[in-house]
Image (tube, rainbow, N blue to C red; front, side, top):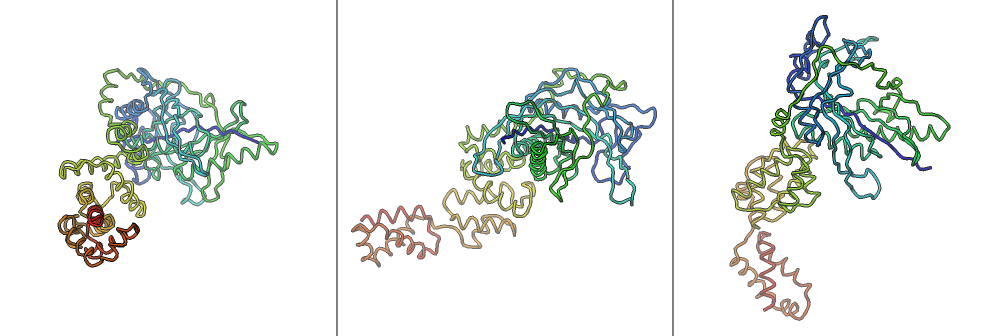
Length: 488
């Protein structure tokens, strides 16, 4: 039986402010429990919230980046529910009047299996609203009790809600990755999933083609793209098996256990009316003027899609190269800097050469050592020095890779390493002609065979010439000289 999968995401993005959304308490990660829980965070009687302007500007920035409507007037509401690490008994959030309205995010989807080709898809964003985070319940170290750490209570979040536009784990992961890259790119979130800065709730349902939406179950707090894929795949199969076995899927909030690879129900899932939303009486409506919006727009960097288009249209790179180079803002900056140094200091404009080395050698070595591009031991200007030798044909490809490995492990500049290891190619046409003349003179019989039609002997002459030059002859120049001389 054919089933359709329907997936929507709610992503909690911790905004990169130094203080909380409604107070001046620090948001720094890793402090001792409850040392950053001020009077507002723990909801002492009589305290009043004061909205953090920086959090609002980060929300506006995101809205502009996804082409969304920025509400000139939005309202904070109280979302009422009980949880041990929610001191007030309600969360200050937004509901029917959020700061960011409808937008879109275009994603590149790499199918997780089979021979399907990558494809592009646009996911609709329903809204993005500001809210405060709850605290953290700690179950592991208290011998039958639960510890409560309220350091995180009041940390500013932007909850980004998508439409149910995704129909596979591959699409959901691609969307989450694109969103993760974007919020880091525009500087509103550090994206650290291990520290909880970027957490995903995934709503999953299945239905028969043409039927209404099925009953959804919400997988909470996924902080790994790998776990997201595993959780969705398991949950989809569980729902299909349940329905085909005569059961009924109940709306629920569920958790994913990475150790077993299974999902399990945590509690029944509430609907919006269960939270009894109403406007927070302590906070005035948030008003955003056109002038303020344009001031924020002026701080936006060139966005990934615009940069990709420029790389393709202006630099002649492939769409694949452009997407790889814009996987993060830091990667794009590294490429731009390498290309700039190669051009300004060596008068070489070769974007494809830069792209090939960064996507190839640099990325492969980073992956092997599990490093980020910001931790690359070779700086952009150092890589450009090496690429200048490559572009001018002064070093072979294998020699360049040897220099690269030495720069990576030992440091140093390309010039000194090439001299020390005697890797520079012979590009002097006179020296190459002398080598070829000597080979032709001492192999007259082979030359006669070649000229009689045995073209395959060309490789024989190349081998002799490379041996005579100790592997340093420029291959392109050597081939040209050999062809000319052997032709008589």
